[in-house]
Image (cartoon, rainbow, N blue to C red; front, side, top):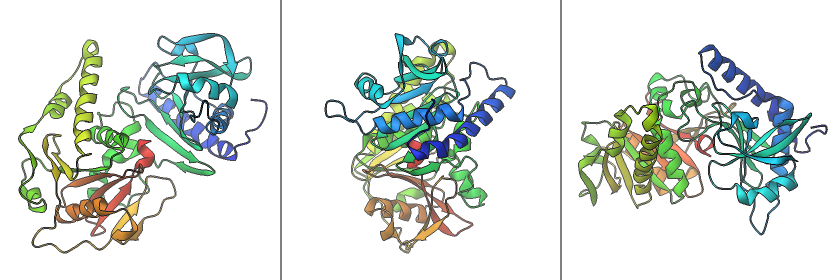
Amino acid sequence: MSTDPTYKAASTVAPIVEAHFARHLDEAQRQGEDKLAPKPDARSIAAIINATFWASFRPEEGRFPKISLAYLPPEQAGQPMVFEHPLPLNAGVLRKLAPAVERPEIHLGVWNHGGELKVWGATRTIPSLCFVLEDIEPGLLVIKHRRFDGFGKYANVAVLKGEQVKVIDEKGTSLPDCPSLLKALLAFTAAATNGPHHSLNVLVQLAASMRAHAHGGSLLVVPAGNELWRESIAQPVLYSVTPAFSALSELIRQKADEEDRRQWESALRRAVDTIAGLTAVDGATVINDKYELLAFGAKIRPTESSSYIDKWVITEPIIGNLPVVVHPTEHGGTRHLSAAQFVYDQRDALALVASQDGRFTVFAWSPCEEMVHAHRVESLLM
Protein backbone atom coordinates (compact mmCIF):
# COMPACT_ATOMS: atom_id res chain seq x y z
CA MET A 1 0.00 0.00 0.00
CA SER A 2 3.04 2.23 0.05
CA THR A 3 3.11 2.73 -3.73
CA ASP A 4 0.54 4.46 -5.89
CA PRO A 5 -1.47 2.29 -8.32
CA THR A 6 -0.01 2.06 -11.81
CA TYR A 7 -3.52 1.43 -13.19
CA LYS A 8 -4.83 5.02 -13.33
CA ALA A 9 -8.54 4.12 -13.31
CA ALA A 10 -8.06 2.58 -9.85
CA SER A 11 -7.16 5.97 -8.36
CA THR A 12 -9.97 7.66 -10.30
CA VAL A 13 -12.78 5.42 -9.09
CA ALA A 14 -11.57 4.67 -5.54
CA PRO A 15 -12.92 7.86 -3.83
CA ILE A 16 -16.28 7.42 -5.57
CA VAL A 17 -16.54 3.82 -4.40
CA GLU A 18 -15.43 4.73 -0.85
CA ALA A 19 -18.25 7.31 -0.69
CA HIS A 20 -20.77 4.76 -2.02
CA PHE A 21 -19.99 2.17 0.65
CA ALA A 22 -19.79 4.76 3.44
CA ARG A 23 -23.21 6.12 2.48
CA HIS A 24 -24.89 2.71 2.30
CA LEU A 25 -23.26 1.32 5.44
CA ASP A 26 -24.20 4.41 7.45
CA GLU A 27 -27.78 4.20 6.22
CA ALA A 28 -27.96 0.48 7.03
CA GLN A 29 -26.73 1.13 10.57
CA ARG A 30 -29.34 3.86 11.04
CA GLN A 31 -32.00 1.36 10.02
CA GLY A 32 -30.81 -1.14 12.62
CA GLU A 33 -28.94 -3.55 10.36
CA ASP A 34 -26.21 -5.54 12.04
CA LYS A 35 -23.49 -7.94 10.89
CA LEU A 36 -22.39 -5.44 8.28
CA ALA A 37 -19.10 -5.45 6.40
CA PRO A 38 -16.31 -2.97 7.25
CA LYS A 39 -16.06 0.30 5.34
CA PRO A 40 -13.43 0.08 2.60
CA ASP A 41 -11.14 3.12 2.35
CA ALA A 42 -10.08 4.64 -0.97
CA ARG A 43 -6.43 3.61 -0.55
CA SER A 44 -7.34 -0.06 -0.02
CA ILE A 45 -9.87 0.02 -2.85
CA ALA A 46 -7.30 1.39 -5.28
CA ALA A 47 -4.68 -1.18 -4.23
CA ILE A 48 -7.09 -4.11 -4.65
CA ILE A 49 -8.21 -2.87 -8.07
CA ASN A 50 -4.63 -2.28 -9.20
CA ALA A 51 -3.39 -5.77 -8.26
CA THR A 52 -6.42 -7.49 -9.77
CA PHE A 53 -6.27 -5.50 -13.01
CA TRP A 54 -2.68 -6.50 -13.72
CA ALA A 55 -3.34 -10.10 -12.65
CA SER A 56 -6.22 -10.31 -15.13
CA PHE A 57 -3.72 -10.19 -18.04
CA ARG A 58 -1.45 -12.93 -16.72
CA PRO A 59 -2.61 -16.45 -17.68
CA GLU A 60 -1.75 -19.47 -15.59
CA GLU A 61 -1.40 -22.71 -17.57
CA GLY A 62 -3.01 -21.04 -20.58
CA ARG A 63 -6.08 -19.75 -18.72
CA PHE A 64 -6.70 -16.13 -17.80
CA PRO A 65 -7.66 -15.74 -14.13
CA LYS A 66 -11.23 -15.23 -12.97
CA ILE A 67 -10.95 -13.99 -9.41
CA SER A 68 -13.31 -12.55 -6.82
CA LEU A 69 -11.80 -10.62 -3.90
CA ALA A 70 -13.66 -9.55 -0.77
CA TYR A 71 -12.44 -6.88 1.66
CA LEU A 72 -13.00 -8.17 5.20
CA PRO A 73 -11.12 -9.74 8.14
CA PRO A 74 -11.33 -13.54 8.62
CA GLU A 75 -13.52 -13.21 11.73
CA GLN A 76 -16.31 -11.66 9.63
CA ALA A 77 -16.32 -14.54 7.16
CA GLY A 78 -18.34 -17.71 7.65
CA GLN A 79 -16.14 -20.81 7.99
CA PRO A 80 -13.13 -19.21 6.28
CA MET A 81 -10.11 -21.09 5.01
CA VAL A 82 -7.24 -19.15 6.57
CA PHE A 83 -3.61 -19.35 5.44
CA GLU A 84 -1.03 -19.84 8.20
CA HIS A 85 0.96 -17.02 6.61
CA PRO A 86 -1.02 -14.25 4.81
CA LEU A 87 0.22 -13.59 1.29
CA PRO A 88 1.07 -10.20 -0.24
CA LEU A 89 -1.58 -8.68 -2.46
CA ASN A 90 0.04 -8.56 -5.88
CA ALA A 91 -0.58 -9.78 -9.42
CA GLY A 92 1.75 -12.76 -9.06
CA VAL A 93 -0.02 -14.14 -5.97
CA LEU A 94 -3.47 -13.63 -7.49
CA ARG A 95 -2.41 -15.35 -10.70
CA LYS A 96 -1.17 -18.42 -8.81
CA LEU A 97 -4.30 -18.65 -6.61
CA ALA A 98 -6.80 -18.06 -9.42
CA PRO A 99 -7.30 -21.72 -10.52
CA ALA A 100 -8.32 -22.69 -6.98
CA VAL A 101 -10.96 -20.02 -6.56
CA GLU A 102 -12.47 -19.49 -10.02
CA ARG A 103 -15.75 -21.26 -9.22
CA PRO A 104 -18.73 -18.99 -8.44
CA GLU A 105 -19.14 -17.48 -4.96
CA ILE A 106 -15.62 -18.23 -3.73
CA HIS A 107 -13.83 -15.07 -2.63
CA LEU A 108 -10.22 -14.45 -1.73
CA GLY A 109 -10.22 -12.55 1.56
CA VAL A 110 -8.15 -9.36 1.71
CA TRP A 111 -7.41 -7.38 4.88
CA ASN A 112 -4.82 -5.03 6.35
CA HIS A 113 -2.04 -6.80 8.22
CA GLY A 114 0.55 -4.52 9.81
CA GLY A 115 -0.21 -1.64 7.46
CA GLU A 116 -0.12 -3.79 4.34
CA LEU A 117 -2.96 -5.47 2.46
CA LYS A 118 -2.62 -9.26 2.50
CA VAL A 119 -4.57 -12.19 1.09
CA TRP A 120 -5.49 -14.12 4.24
CA GLY A 121 -7.41 -17.04 2.69
CA ALA A 122 -10.78 -17.73 1.08
CA THR A 123 -14.46 -17.80 2.00
CA ARG A 124 -17.90 -18.48 0.55
CA THR A 125 -19.73 -16.40 3.15
CA ILE A 126 -19.44 -12.63 3.44
CA PRO A 127 -21.54 -10.03 5.33
CA SER A 128 -24.01 -7.60 3.79
CA LEU A 129 -22.54 -4.66 1.87
CA CYS A 130 -19.13 -6.30 1.67
CA PHE A 131 -16.84 -4.76 -0.97
CA VAL A 132 -16.22 -7.33 -3.70
CA LEU A 133 -14.08 -6.96 -6.81
CA GLU A 134 -14.59 -9.50 -9.57
CA ASP A 135 -12.26 -10.09 -12.51
CA ILE A 136 -14.56 -10.96 -15.43
CA GLU A 137 -11.98 -11.10 -18.23
CA PRO A 138 -8.63 -9.45 -19.00
CA GLY A 139 -9.01 -5.74 -18.24
CA LEU A 140 -12.70 -5.99 -17.23
CA LEU A 141 -13.42 -5.61 -13.49
CA VAL A 142 -16.71 -5.15 -11.61
CA ILE A 143 -17.04 -3.63 -8.14
CA LYS A 144 -20.09 -4.99 -6.33
CA HIS A 145 -21.51 -5.88 -2.94
CA ARG A 146 -23.60 -8.59 -1.37
CA ARG A 147 -27.31 -7.82 -1.05
CA PHE A 148 -28.99 -7.58 2.34
CA ASP A 149 -31.01 -10.77 1.93
CA GLY A 150 -27.93 -12.56 0.59
CA PHE A 151 -29.82 -14.05 -2.36
CA GLY A 152 -29.07 -13.86 -6.04
CA LYS A 153 -27.05 -11.48 -8.15
CA TYR A 154 -24.78 -9.10 -6.22
CA ALA A 155 -25.50 -5.37 -6.64
CA ASN A 156 -22.99 -3.70 -8.97
CA VAL A 157 -21.36 -0.38 -8.04
CA ALA A 158 -18.96 0.30 -10.94
CA VAL A 159 -17.57 -1.37 -14.05
CA LEU A 160 -13.98 -0.81 -15.20
CA LYS A 161 -12.86 -1.77 -18.68
CA GLY A 162 -9.36 -0.61 -19.45
CA GLU A 163 -9.30 3.13 -18.74
CA GLN A 164 -13.10 3.40 -19.09
CA VAL A 165 -14.97 3.72 -15.78
CA LYS A 166 -18.74 3.29 -15.58
CA VAL A 167 -20.32 4.20 -12.24
CA ILE A 168 -23.80 2.78 -11.77
CA ASP A 169 -26.55 5.42 -11.60
CA GLU A 170 -28.24 4.63 -8.29
CA LYS A 171 -30.91 7.32 -8.49
CA GLY A 172 -32.16 6.64 -12.00
CA THR A 173 -31.08 10.04 -13.33
CA SER A 174 -30.25 8.36 -16.65
CA LEU A 175 -33.99 7.80 -17.17
CA PRO A 176 -36.49 10.50 -18.15
CA ASP A 177 -38.85 11.96 -15.57
CA CYS A 178 -41.71 9.70 -16.61
CA PRO A 179 -43.54 7.93 -13.74
CA SER A 180 -45.04 5.17 -15.89
CA LEU A 181 -41.70 4.30 -17.44
CA LEU A 182 -39.87 4.49 -14.11
CA LYS A 183 -42.42 2.10 -12.60
CA ALA A 184 -41.95 -0.33 -15.47
CA LEU A 185 -38.16 -0.25 -15.17
CA LEU A 186 -38.03 -0.08 -11.37
CA ALA A 187 -36.63 -3.61 -11.21
CA PHE A 188 -33.54 -2.45 -13.10
CA THR A 189 -32.65 0.64 -11.11
CA ALA A 190 -29.79 0.36 -8.64
CA ALA A 191 -31.87 2.00 -5.90
CA ALA A 192 -34.40 -0.81 -6.12
CA THR A 193 -31.74 -3.50 -5.80
CA ASN A 194 -29.30 -2.00 -3.30
CA GLY A 195 -31.43 -0.92 -0.36
CA PRO A 196 -32.03 -2.79 2.89
CA HIS A 197 -35.15 -4.95 3.14
CA HIS A 198 -35.80 -4.76 -0.59
CA SER A 199 -38.11 -7.48 -1.89
CA LEU A 200 -36.60 -10.24 -3.99
CA ASN A 201 -36.20 -8.89 -7.49
CA VAL A 202 -37.14 -11.80 -9.69
CA LEU A 203 -36.77 -9.98 -13.00
CA VAL A 204 -33.14 -9.16 -12.21
CA GLN A 205 -32.46 -12.79 -11.29
CA LEU A 206 -34.13 -13.97 -14.51
CA ALA A 207 -32.11 -11.45 -16.52
CA ALA A 208 -28.84 -12.55 -14.90
CA SER A 209 -29.64 -16.20 -15.59
CA MET A 210 -30.60 -15.44 -19.22
CA ARG A 211 -27.32 -13.61 -19.73
CA ALA A 212 -25.37 -16.44 -18.08
CA HIS A 213 -26.51 -19.17 -20.49
CA ALA A 214 -24.96 -17.09 -23.34
CA HIS A 215 -27.30 -18.39 -26.07
CA GLY A 216 -29.20 -15.13 -26.36
CA GLY A 217 -32.95 -15.00 -25.87
CA SER A 218 -36.11 -12.96 -25.31
CA LEU A 219 -38.46 -12.90 -22.32
CA LEU A 220 -41.84 -11.14 -22.63
CA VAL A 221 -43.64 -10.08 -19.44
CA VAL A 222 -47.37 -9.51 -19.97
CA PRO A 223 -50.22 -8.52 -17.60
CA ALA A 224 -51.84 -11.47 -15.83
CA GLY A 225 -55.41 -12.19 -16.93
CA ASN A 226 -55.02 -10.30 -20.24
CA GLU A 227 -54.89 -12.27 -23.50
CA LEU A 228 -54.21 -9.34 -25.85
CA TRP A 229 -50.55 -10.35 -26.07
CA ARG A 230 -51.59 -13.28 -28.27
CA GLU A 231 -52.43 -10.81 -31.06
CA SER A 232 -48.69 -10.13 -31.35
CA ILE A 233 -47.74 -13.81 -31.52
CA ALA A 234 -47.95 -16.05 -34.59
CA GLN A 235 -50.48 -18.84 -34.10
CA PRO A 236 -50.42 -21.62 -33.21
CA VAL A 237 -47.76 -21.32 -30.51
CA LEU A 238 -45.66 -24.48 -30.77
CA TYR A 239 -44.72 -24.55 -27.07
CA SER A 240 -47.81 -23.14 -25.37
CA VAL A 241 -48.14 -24.13 -21.70
CA THR A 242 -51.56 -25.10 -20.30
CA PRO A 243 -52.20 -24.65 -17.44
CA ALA A 244 -49.61 -21.94 -16.81
CA PHE A 245 -46.45 -23.29 -15.14
CA SER A 246 -46.54 -21.67 -11.69
CA ALA A 247 -43.56 -23.14 -9.80
CA LEU A 248 -41.71 -19.80 -9.67
CA SER A 249 -44.85 -17.86 -8.78
CA GLU A 250 -45.66 -20.23 -5.90
CA LEU A 251 -42.14 -20.00 -4.48
CA ILE A 252 -42.22 -16.20 -4.53
CA ARG A 253 -45.45 -16.22 -2.53
CA GLN A 254 -43.94 -18.49 0.12
CA LYS A 255 -42.37 -17.02 3.22
CA ALA A 256 -39.45 -19.20 4.21
CA ASP A 257 -38.33 -19.11 7.84
CA GLU A 258 -34.64 -19.18 8.78
CA GLU A 259 -34.51 -22.98 9.06
CA ASP A 260 -35.90 -23.50 5.55
CA ARG A 261 -34.17 -20.52 3.95
CA ARG A 262 -31.41 -22.40 2.15
CA GLN A 263 -33.78 -25.02 0.77
CA TRP A 264 -36.17 -22.28 -0.42
CA GLU A 265 -33.33 -20.32 -2.07
CA SER A 266 -32.11 -23.45 -3.84
CA ALA A 267 -35.61 -24.17 -5.16
CA LEU A 268 -36.00 -20.56 -6.26
CA ARG A 269 -32.69 -20.64 -8.16
CA ARG A 270 -33.77 -23.81 -9.96
CA ALA A 271 -37.12 -22.27 -10.92
CA VAL A 272 -35.44 -19.08 -12.18
CA ASP A 273 -32.88 -21.07 -14.18
CA THR A 274 -35.63 -23.28 -15.64
CA ILE A 275 -37.53 -20.33 -17.10
CA ALA A 276 -34.36 -18.49 -18.14
CA GLY A 277 -33.16 -21.66 -19.86
CA LEU A 278 -36.27 -21.75 -22.04
CA THR A 279 -35.27 -18.39 -23.56
CA ALA A 280 -32.41 -20.20 -25.33
CA VAL A 281 -35.03 -21.87 -27.57
CA ASP A 282 -35.64 -20.00 -30.82
CA GLY A 283 -38.50 -17.54 -30.31
CA ALA A 284 -39.64 -15.67 -27.21
CA THR A 285 -40.57 -16.98 -23.78
CA VAL A 286 -43.75 -15.47 -22.31
CA ILE A 287 -44.54 -15.07 -18.61
CA ASN A 288 -47.13 -12.92 -16.86
CA ASP A 289 -46.40 -10.37 -14.14
CA LYS A 290 -47.15 -13.06 -11.53
CA TYR A 291 -44.18 -15.00 -12.95
CA GLU A 292 -46.30 -17.81 -14.40
CA LEU A 293 -44.95 -19.37 -17.60
CA LEU A 294 -47.40 -19.13 -20.53
CA ALA A 295 -45.34 -20.15 -23.57
CA PHE A 296 -41.87 -20.38 -25.07
CA GLY A 297 -40.55 -20.53 -28.61
CA ALA A 298 -43.20 -17.94 -29.55
CA LYS A 299 -42.79 -16.02 -32.83
CA ILE A 300 -43.48 -12.29 -32.51
CA ARG A 301 -45.38 -10.53 -35.30
CA PRO A 302 -46.93 -7.05 -35.66
CA THR A 303 -50.66 -6.84 -34.97
CA GLU A 304 -52.93 -6.41 -37.97
CA SER A 305 -53.61 -2.76 -37.09
CA SER A 306 -50.00 -1.89 -36.24
CA SER A 307 -47.34 0.06 -38.07
CA TYR A 308 -43.70 -1.02 -38.04
CA ILE A 309 -41.49 0.53 -35.37
CA ASP A 310 -38.92 2.87 -36.92
CA LYS A 311 -37.01 4.23 -33.90
CA TRP A 312 -36.53 3.93 -30.17
CA VAL A 313 -34.61 5.74 -27.45
CA ILE A 314 -31.68 4.10 -25.64
CA THR A 315 -30.37 4.74 -22.13
CA GLU A 316 -27.92 3.01 -19.80
CA PRO A 317 -27.96 3.15 -15.96
CA ILE A 318 -24.59 4.91 -15.85
CA ILE A 319 -23.86 8.31 -14.30
CA GLY A 320 -23.58 10.88 -17.08
CA ASN A 321 -25.46 8.80 -19.65
CA LEU A 322 -27.67 10.73 -22.08
CA PRO A 323 -30.62 9.25 -24.02
CA VAL A 324 -30.07 8.66 -27.74
CA VAL A 325 -32.77 8.08 -30.37
CA VAL A 326 -31.70 5.40 -32.86
CA HIS A 327 -32.99 3.57 -35.89
CA PRO A 328 -33.58 -0.16 -35.27
CA THR A 329 -30.65 -1.11 -37.50
CA GLU A 330 -28.32 0.78 -35.15
CA HIS A 331 -29.04 -1.37 -32.11
CA GLY A 332 -29.14 -5.14 -32.16
CA GLY A 333 -30.61 -7.49 -34.72
CA THR A 334 -33.84 -9.34 -35.42
CA ARG A 335 -34.35 -10.35 -31.79
CA HIS A 336 -34.18 -6.73 -30.59
CA LEU A 337 -36.41 -5.48 -33.40
CA SER A 338 -39.12 -8.05 -32.73
CA ALA A 339 -39.04 -7.38 -28.96
CA ALA A 340 -39.32 -3.62 -29.53
CA GLN A 341 -42.21 -4.23 -31.95
CA PHE A 342 -43.96 -6.34 -29.32
CA VAL A 343 -43.70 -3.53 -26.74
CA TYR A 344 -44.77 -0.98 -29.35
CA ASP A 345 -47.97 -3.00 -29.91
CA GLN A 346 -48.45 -4.27 -26.33
CA ARG A 347 -47.74 -1.18 -24.26
CA ASP A 348 -48.42 -2.79 -20.87
CA ALA A 349 -45.69 -5.37 -21.51
CA LEU A 350 -41.94 -5.56 -20.94
CA ALA A 351 -39.43 -7.32 -23.16
CA LEU A 352 -36.04 -8.53 -21.88
CA VAL A 353 -33.48 -9.35 -24.57
CA ALA A 354 -30.13 -11.06 -24.04
CA SER A 355 -27.50 -11.02 -26.79
CA GLN A 356 -24.92 -13.75 -27.21
CA ASP A 357 -22.17 -11.17 -26.73
CA GLY A 358 -23.42 -10.31 -23.23
CA ARG A 359 -25.45 -7.18 -23.97
CA PHE A 360 -28.81 -7.04 -22.24
CA THR A 361 -31.69 -4.67 -23.08
CA VAL A 362 -35.03 -4.08 -21.38
CA PHE A 363 -37.72 -2.62 -23.64
CA ALA A 364 -40.68 -0.68 -22.19
CA TRP A 365 -43.18 1.81 -23.58
CA SER A 366 -42.60 5.42 -22.50
CA PRO A 367 -45.86 7.41 -22.66
CA CYS A 368 -43.96 10.64 -21.95
CA GLU A 369 -41.69 10.16 -24.95
CA GLU A 370 -44.39 8.41 -27.03
CA MET A 371 -41.72 5.93 -27.96
CA VAL A 372 -40.32 2.53 -27.05
CA HIS A 373 -37.54 2.95 -24.50
CA ALA A 374 -34.55 0.57 -24.59
CA HIS A 375 -32.60 0.40 -21.32
CA ARG A 376 -29.17 -1.27 -21.64
CA VAL A 377 -28.58 -3.01 -18.29
CA GLU A 378 -25.65 -5.41 -18.79
CA SER A 379 -23.61 -3.19 -16.46
CA LEU A 380 -25.99 -4.28 -13.67
CA LEU A 381 -25.77 -7.98 -14.54
CA MET A 382 -22.04 -8.74 -14.83
